[in-house]
Length: 154
Image (cartoon, rainbow, N blue to C red):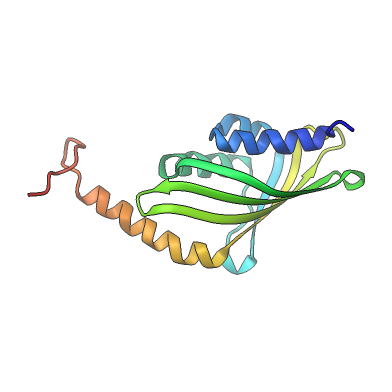
């Protein structure tokens, strides 16, 4: 049985992340799509498409060689929904970034556009890693000379 349209859209979305193709990622969403980040204890408000695009663009500069691997995909065709369990990795100024996500994607009736996302991430990993990343990025910034080159260590 061939893949459904919404499954092809979900797979294309993961591929777009692996290429960090922000226009393609945003293009998979409806203009009114909201991204909800969980767990709620992280205190992240929902992001509209413009805020999400801005976030992705800034992350693109921080996460090099970003990749997602689908560990599991569950499809609910009747309710236009796909759940993805994903493993992520990237290279950063603080070293290797490794995380797990669960994305719940709701689609329009055509299956071609995502109308809402609910994204769960490993909050313990985020709590521990992002302060290290911030410190490493600050250290990099402080070691740059005024012309943008890194100061040599003597």
